[in-house]
Each structure stands twice: as C-alpha cells, then as structure tokens.
Amino acid sequence: MCGRFSVDKALTPIVSELFNTRYNVETNANLSPSQSVATIINSSSNYQQVNALWGIKPNWSKKLIINAQAETVAIKPTFKQAFQSQRCLVPCSGWFEWRTEEGKKVKYLFEHANKMPLYMAGILFQHEHTELVTLTIQPNDKCGQYHKRMPALVLAKDKDYWFNAPSQELEPLLQHVEDRVIQVERAD
Image 1 (tube, rainbow, N blue to C red):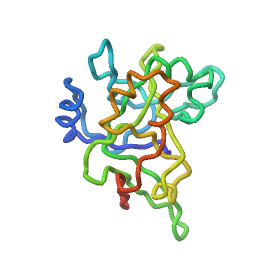
Image 2 (image 1 turned 30 degrees about the horizontal axis):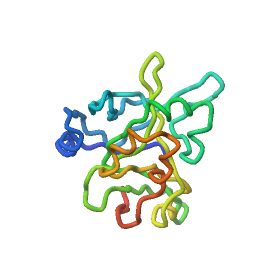
Image 3 (image 1 turned 135 degrees about the vertical axis):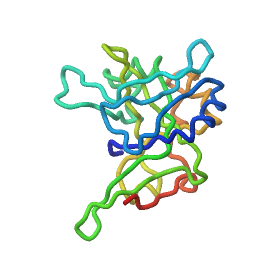
C-alpha cells in the first residue's frame, strides 16, 4: 500500500453511530505520512477517538515506518506488543495507489463500493506523541492489478472481534476483503 489515503468529514455521522462515540474529523483528500490521523480505540469497553501521527521512526530505522505486514505483525519485535494491546481502526474514505500506464504514473482511488467508510487495521505506539502504523496484507484480485499490498480492512461487523480477541486469533480478519466490496476509479 502506498502512503496516501482519504478521509471525508461526510462519513463522521456513520462512524459516530457505529462506534457510539463522538467522532470528529476534517476532510483530508490526501492524508500522508507524519500527518495526524483520527483513529478509533476500545478502552474499557468504550469506543473513543484518538488522534495519532501516521508513522514511527525507531532508532534503528533510517526512515519513517507507516505500514506493517499483517502476516508478521504478531512476531516482529517492533510491532508485537502494540498488536497485542494497542489495536485501532482507521476510518477512511479510501486509499490511493499509482501505476505506470503508457509511461505515466496514474493515480487510482480505492473506496467502498457503496461509499461507506472503510476501516483500516492499525496499531498505536505511545512515545512523545501517539503514533500509528497501518497493517497491510496480500491484495485481493482487483487491488493486485495496481499494487502488491493493500490495507488490512476490518469490516464493521467485525469491529468488536478486532478489539477483543486475543492477537493469535485475529488471522481470519487479516485476509483480504472480497473484490466486490472495493471499487477502483481513476483519481486525476
């Protein structure tokens, strides 16, 4: 997954109702690494919004890390603890990928086929600021035509399981969603 996604304020009432919490976000059609991202956490069985900076920079890394592979997040030392106890969801309108066509980079938007929010799986880190890493997976057939990874998306019906299940039981959620859930359109 590349490092850009979109958040639309119009989705605020849907997210607020689903999580029974006050969710407030401004539209950002090109959210990029190191920017503030509105996430949802579950604290003491109550959902709440927590804003986090997208990306971590461990002292061993030369660059900002914005994604972790879902297949290894439970065992990699950098991510293991956060995956066990600091999972979050990132409501978004969609994400962007670029592919080269006829020698030019062309931007594509991936969004929910019914224009509903998508919920990217993420993990939080508490440092000087709260920081976010999103999880990626092998793509479904549709997304695989554009990129070798896609965000791990948690369906709204699975939100409680995402937050409450032990980390070793989350593998079924970290599979790609069906092609029909995602629509792709050119985003010139």
